[in-house]
Image (tube, rainbow, N blue to C red; front, side, top):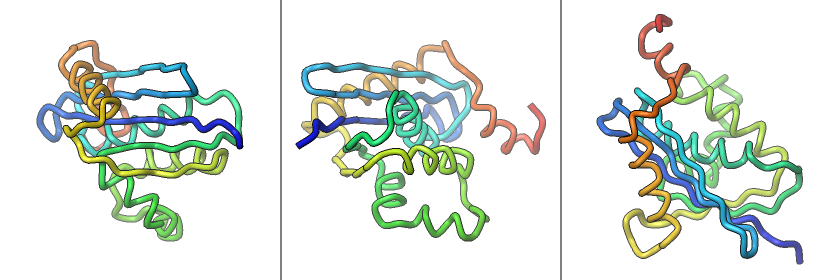
Length: 158
């Protein structure tokens, strides 16, 4: 049996929209890596999804067996219930975060991915760690610009 990559993700926003951030913990055997980043204006759902996209984009080879643990029903249900695959047929018409979903779909084709929903702020040590990383990133003021979100929200003006 091949080794499985385990990824935990979380997103946070101070206000919705407001400053936000994501946190990622990746576990491969005994190796653990953490990542986080803050953004000056975004939403919680964008950060939840961005955490997943960024984690998958960090993989250096294709065909990885991945399990992603997330406390975001939005992300988990969209994939596990197949909603995102239906949105492709409608060109994501009326769907928020289409830019991130399209990035997810590129990564989805490269790997065998399974999502598992976990209760947020419960007893999962890695999910709790992601929450700390995401909220620290949101509060850090070391923010990037979530260009696609700000462009959409401002009518195309940044």
